[in-house]
Structure formats: C-alpha cells, structure tokens
Image 1 (cartoon, one colour):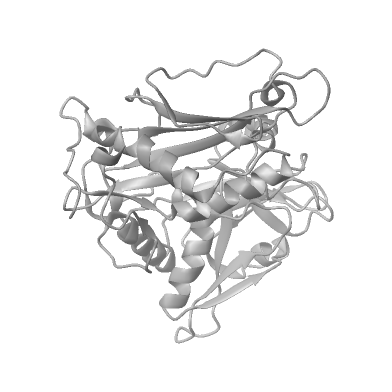
Image 2 (cartoon, one colour; image 1 turned 90 degrees about the vertical axis):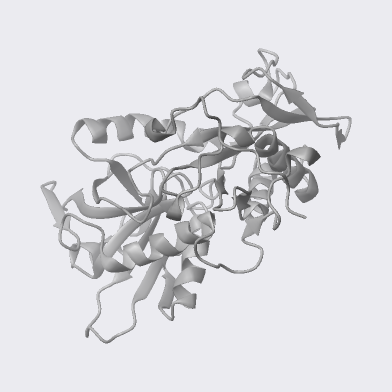
Length: 372
C-alpha cells in the first residue's frame, strides 16, 4: 500500500524557490562512541553542539554527501540512488579514519530526514522543473582531542532543504555557462584525497571560484596536478563531453575522464548508464585538455547532484606563452541536443516521468511519514 501523501506546505512561496537554505522541521543524527552507533535522535534546532577541540573542527575530519528527493505526479516522494551515496560516504569515511555508517542506518537516516520534512518537498512538475528536496548526510569527528589522532566520538547527521536550480538546469531547460581553467592552484594531488568528498577539499577552491565569478565565469575547471595537461573536474561537478563525430550518422560518444584524483560522481555514473541505454558509445578514459583546444568535442557539460547537468558554452584558459585564449563549444550559447537528451532522461527518471533502471528510485512505494 502506498504511503499517505503529505502535500507541499501551502505557506511556502514555491514559485520563488531558489538555490538556498530554508528552515525545516529539523534533522536526524546518530552518535558513535565506545565502538558502535547509538540510537536515532531528532533535533528541531539547526545547530550541532560540539567541543571546541573536536577533531572535525581542528583537523578537518569531516565528509558529506548530497542527494535529492523528488515529488512524483501521484504525490509520493522518492530519493534518487541513495545506496550509491551510502557507498561513497563510507569510501570517504575510510580515507579520513572515521567509522563506517552501515547502509541500513544510512537509508534509515535519509528516510527519516525526508519523511519528517515532506511538507518541504516541492510540488511535482515534469522533469523536476519545480525543484527538489536536497538531502545532505554528513559525518564528522565530534570527539575532543588535542593530539593528531582519529578521535573517539563521531556524529552522523542528515538535514534537508527545499532546493531550486543552481544554474537554471531544470525542467528540460539548460542555459549554457562560461568556464575558466584554474592554472595557479592544484585541487587534488595524485594518490591524494581527490576521490574523497571531504570538506577540506572544497574550502581552498572558494577564492578561485570567487575570482572567476568576478571575472564573469560561472564555473572553474581543474587539470591534473602532475602534468597539468589532463582534465580532472570542475570545482563543483564532474566533466562530461560529447565527442565530435566524423559523420552525422555516427553514434554519439559520451566521454568521461578517468583519473584517480576526481570524485566518483553518482550523476556521472547515472549519465553513462543512460547513454548506454540510448545506444550511445561511452568512453571512460584520460582526457587531454588539448582535445578541447582542438575542438574535439561537440558538447561539454558539468554534472553533479546540485546542478544535475550544466552545459558549458566556452572554456577560457592560458596558453603556454601566458596569453589568454577562449574555446567556444557548440553554438557558443545554448545546450546541445545530446546534453538536453541526457538532462531530460535524468530529470525525467528522478521526477517519475521516464522509467529508469530498477532500484534507482527509493523507496519503491515512496517515503512514508508514518514510519519516521
């Protein structure tokens, strides 16, 4: 039997939903100490109390995930691939010497966080055009230590917020944005923490993003730190491209970078599966930035949970002589047809307009407030 529908709040101004934080009913948390996870706790305050010498504050032992819940046409709410986020959180936890969050506990937590905030899940619209409920699971070392040690207490918590579009990529629409290569900063070293979704991987990028935005660029792109010739990822998202075809009749080829220094994106993994289902070729390999310079791609996009898919209409970079150059992609303005096809399939699956692979939407019957 399907859960009872909890309608979106009539007091929320849904047409004005932005990419921002909004007050909700609260968040769920668990505390790990003495070798095991404690019982679920609920807090109606948006604050976490911890010691000033918590390892997460002093030494950066903190990682997080991002996933979305969408309201379907029948009013039910479902999360997109939370099992993938569970696995990635534990990859991050292992790298940062934190305890594993069991998959069952992770799913219980995200279910409770959404179930007790169902009124903050936006109304249904085809292809998620009215927004989503963003879910942020976080693991942090909250035990106090003075020395550089892993810590003896950890907190896992999940909060949510209704969410609008980051770059306007929703509802099958995707305006192109301008990108710039960051040449004077290395985001992640080979054999480092580039595959870890740790807070410490993001803070150093902030000033370069701010600089780029002040110069008129919406997003920044990072090359590999060893040779600075291979594409790693954007600061906020993974890099995906559509290879230029020799003939119009050729199958499209989706190209995704293979690198040990980038985050393993759930969105990118999903897009590769969608591309295969459409009969496209998928090429997962190292990508030389020179391929962009040489015009080897018909379309380029950034992809991630928050943005879904963001078309890139140009990439500005520095040549070997230090002179700035710009590569226009596609028509230099709008999303290309393959980008739109991927976006419509992805958001269509998430919002229940397109049938996707089994298990991508969870729970199958919908989030149940009675079980929170």
